Length: 299
Image 1 (cartoon, rainbow, N blue to C red):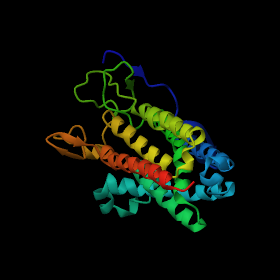
Image 2 (image 1 turned 45 degrees about the horizontal axis):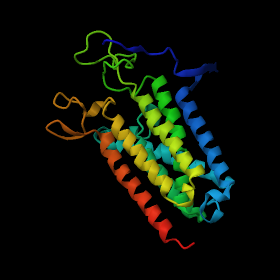
Image 3 (image 1 turned 90 degrees about the vertical axis):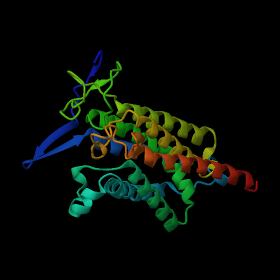
């Protein structure tokens, strides 16, 4: 490698204490989830206190409803993320070891599965309260990039989900035998900091666009608009980053070094790309549906 950036000396643990012979640690990843949920919650609560942002100058739910919604969303993230990982990435392994499906502490969560879990949670919650689920989805999509931004930064600090080997000057030398196992590379192996690419695209840029549309361009007044922009934006960002992201190990083989989940003669899609394309299509469809519905709505 001509140039590379050494991995910064940042411990995955913020603080660690020992009580009664047991060690308890607060990790950056946990803090990212907590901070993302709290910040998102406060933004949604603030939006419900501004009726002018919503259709008919009426927010779809009260601030107290947002707290109840959080419980549903957290369950959707955990259950959907875990089941998505099981079904999308290692169905054969978990079919043979069903007892490990619920062992979430062993790792293995899929964003696309978590997203489907949240969608189901939003629909069920909204129906139980008689709320327009599309507007609730808009509110959540508007703040989800906050969690994505913090989560991807935590992925970087944890030195996980790194990208493919690169000789670009901003390549990062991640620690660990797996990160340094680069075919054809002599010496230290630098990789794309794909976690930071995703933090910028899925988190910072997409989040700024959604907040601008929701708070400055009255997009919340057209239910479905922000949901569509989020799905299309996330899907497009993830599709692009997959080109430089290290593929999932279960898809890599001597005849498929790129780790493509679906391919013909070496050309195809990774699992992340295959799952992102329907998101882009759905997002575009939602935006068009929202605009058409807005034009036909009586004034």
